[in-house]
Image (tube, rainbow, N blue to C red):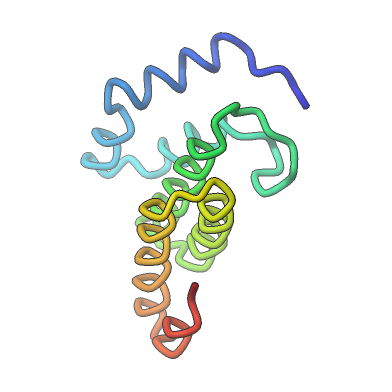
Length: 122
C-alpha cells in the first residue's frame, strides 16, 4: 500500500468540504473534474491498491468520475466506473451509495438504448 501524502488528504478535504466538485459540475467543467478525481486515485483506478483510508470515499470518487465521463459524452466509460463504484458500495454496505450508482447505471444504459440491460443491473 502506498502512503497517502498529507497534501493529497488536504486536497481531498478541500474538494469535498468546500463543494468544489459541485461547483465544477454546475459550471460544466467535466474535464477538470476527471483530472481532479483521477489524481485522488491510484493510476489503476480499479486495482487493489488503496490510497484512501475510507473505502466509501473511494466509491464516491469513482462514481463521480463516472458522472463526469457520462456528461462528457463517454457513456461506455461512465458505465465502467458506475459498476466499480457499485462493487465498492456493496463491500462497505452503503445502500444509498449503491442505489445512486445503480440509478446512474440505468440512466446510462437507457441513454445508449440498451433498456433491456437495466433489468439485469444489481
